Image 1 (cartoon, rainbow, N blue to C red):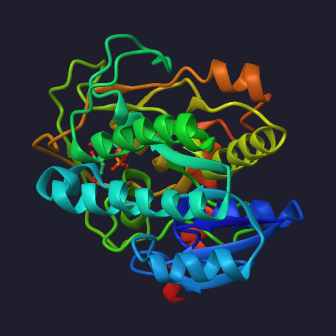
Image 2 (image 1 turned 180 degrees about the vertical axis):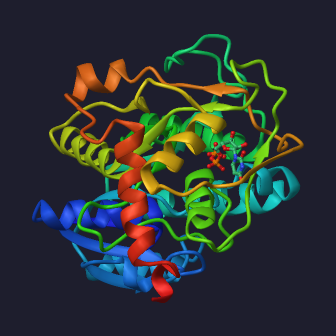
Image 3 (image 1 turned 180 degrees about the horizontal axis):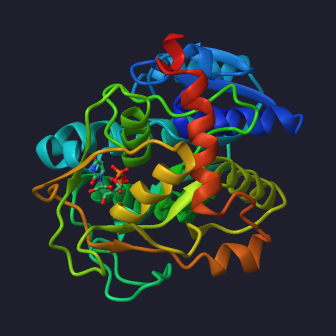
Length: 328
Ligand code: UDP
């Protein structure tokens, strides 16, 4: 039986495909390659297309024996989502509904869904637990929360069992050195910091120094992309064994401020990395740190690359060897 990875050429999706192939799974990849990279897909049967297109979905489900889906196909930029909410609701909600309709038609009953810490909004308690309030402060988080609710009803009506994984900040690169993070344009903190270290940018702009945190900059929980992939794999195994639907946080349980991340990157790279302070970015909560106790207890997930130094080091290893990302 095959696993369909939607968005399998993207940053997290490509690391998932690599993990599934290493595990000996039969993998089918769907990606529209708007943001994904052909070179990032290290194996599997690849289809070019969009989850909003039923023609390509029907083709994939009729040509392969798919028993499970892992869905990464989405727009995922907080700042952009505030400016273009309809783009986010169309791609992230309509796209997933389309996918679920085809899963229902073909009797496919397992889906692991990429959700996000942005479903919580400004948290009342740190670390954040799964049962805490979900009041998103941006359309990206809202779109993912909407899909979580849709999944709940699809489970009740059609018996489609899901695991929604609420990621905190995915970072780092594969230790095989072949795949890493390459967004165009790049908006994420660690890649931009490393572009400064490489001399490709003048400075890192710190979005806000007036947050109620120890140094005034936002605190995030960074999780290695291979640890994320491992969690999806465990979630998939559990669903295939007849497990119920679940929602899990995925983070390391430790928060780092933007300034701390820059400081660690200075140590890892040996470069000065110039930083400048600017206005806050719209939609950013001050602190997002996960409690991942539930997935650790229930799935036995153990993050392997959980120090911020290791995370930045693996990313640096990839950037040093691929200064132009997948264009090299
Ligand atoms: N950030 C920043 N400068 C940048 C990019 C990001 O100060 O050029 C901050 C951002 O405000 C957030 C943190 O770094 O607090 C992580 O942002 P990123 O875009 O990497 O991930 P997100 O938290 O949006 O998923």
